[in-house]
Amino acid sequence: MSLERSAQKSHLESEYERYRRQAEKARNEGNKKKAARYYHECASVLEDLADIETSERLTEERLELARNLASAAEKLSQGQPIKTDDSASDDPTIRESSAGENQSLEHDSDGQNSSAGGDTPASSTDAANGEPAKASQYLDPQPDLSFSDVGGMTDLKETLKDQVIDPLERPELYKEYDLGVVNGVLLYGPPGTGKTYITQALAGELGYNYIEVQASDITSSLVGEAADNVAELFEVARENQPCLLFIDEIEAIAAERSGGSRKTMSESQMITQFLTEMSETKGEDVIAVSATNLPDEIDGAAWRRFDERIEVPPPDGTARAAARRIHLRDRPVLTQEIDWEQIKTQTEGYSSSDLEIIASNAARKALKEARDADEVVPIEQQHLEAAIEGTDSSLQAWNES
Image 1 (cartoon, rainbow, N blue to C red):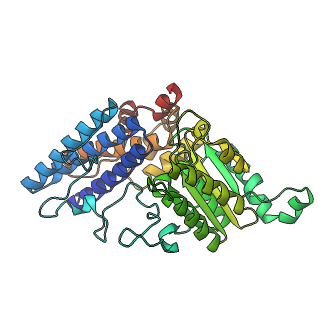
Image 2: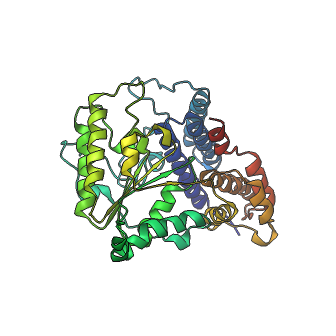
Image 3: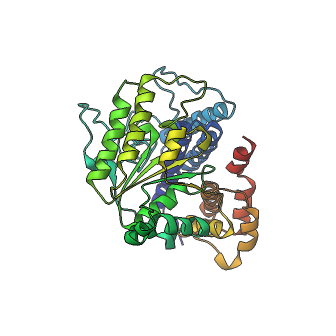
């Protein structure tokens, strides 16, 4: 069966966008090594794209960008800055070509520049006029997920059912014991362990409206602006009850205040506003879920605002198997001829995001063979094992830190 070049190109462009978003997210988190890994993946995908380009000019542009990204990744892995020739920018990602052929890699369907957050909500102010954002800019589509879509994580799902969902379904019973509804939940643990995914499944399980933001959507160096962003965010959540509000990288918003570092006025106002808003959610049909990889950096007063603080550990064998199914389900795989127990054992100690990289790398290895054969070559044991061998666990760096 002949492969369609356009299908190959579309797949690779999708892979590039996904890795680039992950790289930018890691940079925003200050995780240079993780960002370097994803930029290396971007460069690899671009090289594959260059192989299938029919235009010599586009081929060279892809390769030039791949070289730039590989160089940026190398600098990041060594802890060096990656400033470009334009001193106003340190973003190593793609620049649009003069003819605009690279638009599919740099712009979304409306021609707007893609952001690091991908599907995350827009910034809390309108860039054109500074006016407060509309609710539609914060509200995400209700997640089409439930706990039945989450493989493994059994203890975590049971904890959320017992401590978050059941009190909402039987408030009178809990009232008899002077126990109220949970309005604040903190999820903490290593990066890439599924904190965002389980939160989306929780919103889907509850059938709540959903808001998802990164700390970078809220923070600002301008005095008062970050605090206003926090207030506006919670206001939108309250106006759209029932609502689950998810804030990732909460340590950037509610950082420890008693340490040696001095806070700017903007940071102090932001933390104070966050504490106020968390207190005011009590009694509202709003659940504020926050996630962090750095629980020790969260301010003590903010920590106490969360009714439940729940650790999200690395995925167990069942969760890894589920992640593997998700990342391979739309790809040709010789399922019956793969020793899945061996794959599960070999991926012990890998995060969910690591497994995504492994699946993509295995697919690219099979795709390279398919291009030579001009027919579909399914993903086999050898492709998966080679991808595992070539992918370092991000949790290893976490455990050593």
